[in-house]
Length: 228
Image (cartoon, rainbow, N blue to C red; front, side, top):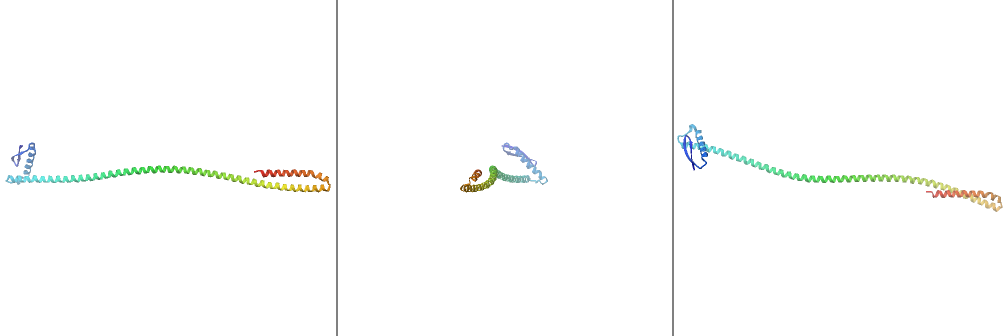
């Protein structure tokens, strides 16, 4: 323990205190002395009453200080509560951000899949267009070939009709020649029956000529019929 001498209101007092508390006790004495000096002309003849008033001043200051400390603590609590609320909001925002990142990743994956599917679809469409172009070209070639075949068939039909008409003409000539040969044969037979040999000798070259013409007509007819 230690003894400290403090001066209050012009009088000295010895106060016992713990070791190391001397400066603190001296400071308290100075505060109390200051409060007595604030009384000024209101000092009472009684020392105890003056000390009471000084103690009330100190108590009032202590009360105000406590009120300020409580207000500061309340403000601190509000700040801490606000900070906690902001932290909760920040944590919620971070959670939402993480969810959005995950959702964005999923959407990007779906988009990549859709783009790949679109590329495959475009490739299939291109293949189908090329195949359609090839089929159209084949159809065009087939139409042209069919037109060419039709033209050829038409031409062959006209040639066949012309050859048929020619064959009909040759057949008519053959029939006419055969009729002439028959008439000449009949005339020859009549002449032979009447004993007119001179006439038979005159008719022989004519009959041979008719026979040759008949053979030529037959050959032409056969050649015209056999031709495609």
